[in-house]
Amino acid sequence: MCILVVIGVLGGLLLATGQEERKPCTVNFGENSSGVGVLNRTFNGIVYCEYLGIRYAEPPVGVQRFKNPTLRAPNGTEEYTNLGSICPQLDALGHATKVLGEEDCLFMNVYSPAVPGGNDTVRKYPVLVYIHGGSYAIWSPQTDMFGVDLLIESGILIVSFNYRLFVLGFLRHPEFNITGNFGLKDQLVAMQWVQRYVAPFGGDPSNITVMGQSVGAHSVTYHMHLEPFRGLFHRAIAMSGSLLAPSAMIYVPENFTRTYLESIHLTSYDQLMEAPFKELFLFPPTNRRFVFATIGLPIFLPTMENANELGALLTKPSHELILEEPVNQVPLMIGMTATEFTPHFTEEMLFCADDNFPNRGNVTVLQMVRKLIAKAALLARKIEPQGAGRHFYGKLTDMANMYFPVKRLLKELREVHRYRAPIFYYRFEYDGRFGKYKNMFYKGELDESYGGAMHGDDLGYLFSPYVVKQALANRSAFETEWKVTERNVEQFSNFVKFGNPTPGKSDNINVLWPAFNSNLSTPQLLNINDENEVREDDDRWNFIYQLWSRIHECLFYYDCSPVEDLLDKVERLSSGSLSSVKLEDLFDDENMT
Image (spheres, rainbow, N blue to C red):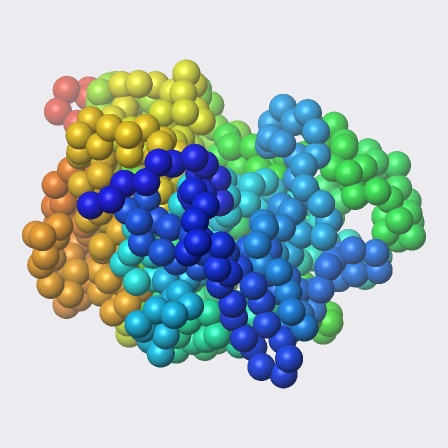
């Protein structure tokens, strides 16, 4: 197998020049419109076409700032040879030093196995549309896409795109007729553009999978539930996120908008529209975030619009949306990493939460919740000092922000809606050197006693990893990482093609992945490690899950009696002898969720 010398990684691997590489890729849309891209090669030498910097919507600048996007059709002969600008953003969520990007940023990239003069020009490839993460505030597709090499070799056409972020993407201020959710509306227009124009690139508009990670996964699950997205995709992949996550919705944006406008010294609509975009990002760091379950979240997130507003997209809160059947009941792959953010929060010693939940009017509710959490922490440390009691608050933070939102959505889909399409649930455990976040981004900030992949690490085993140059230069040293990657790419590619990650066994796949919502009484998941393993999924004896489940129902659905009952049980158990007490004694079998 031919291995090329790698001379660049961001946005794709660069090529040595040659006669074949100078021949451009072309795409014809008809009616005198076309686009010119560039030929590239995978690191195994397979030629493919890149179409970069495609405008899928009109630039959201000038009078179009804080306006719903308008789909842009290809016009004339366009060059798709360079990445477009990323959307405006701070260079970090926390200690930011500058504003990156340009306001003219609604660009798309297409990576296609279809090449000019190839033997399969009639073939239509299944399409994978990727939505990047970053708390709806930072990043772009290039943050984690260090190449699409193995997906291309698997016969997948990949699409990525920018969408508006932070204040430009999610400010809502009805007094100025600014409706909000522009980032989600950009995603809608991007999906409409793909449906309309992907065929000339070699893509199959009848076989589109939408995939997102972190808030990208929040978005994917929004797409499943919102009517305007009906029929725009045929499969869905949600990696470490769901629309129930605290970072997926802000309930009282007006509380933050007033403070925001005061901090940037703008008092009128005209001032807001005419201000240089960078000035909109420069306000005190303490005003940029609110807290839910200890994690600081951006003050600009998806929120509810009024149904009578022009182009209204999200008119119900996410905790109500999941009670309705999804409008897109398509095959779903959904999962999380083994530890998500737990290793990052092991030093937490208390529970903090601002009022970003529906049941915020009753002051005693949060007091009762805090009392229950404090007493449950003490009890857990006494009974299970190396189990639930170890780093209790860190585990609770991860439960509330990451694990529970995914599991609550799964429960609703499987048990209430009897979701008609197959659901494939996974836990990505493999802790190797392709994991960018554990090995580089958060390095030095983690409790290293926790093994297993953390939030975002699984992307390094789907796209080419951030250490691709080293891993190609010494493949034998990264043998297990490549093995896990090749198997994982095959599973994801199978799902994109067939709606089933393991339609059969192969050289890479020796474990068949059962559907989570099959007829089995106990649902199953696939644990992805150096060797895959099917496991039963059972949270009945997960103390922190059961604790947060009751708190969630109180905060979001006003059902607080289980919290009162549990607090009474915790207090009674804590006052007696603990020699023979188990944490599961707190939960009656019939109340398990």
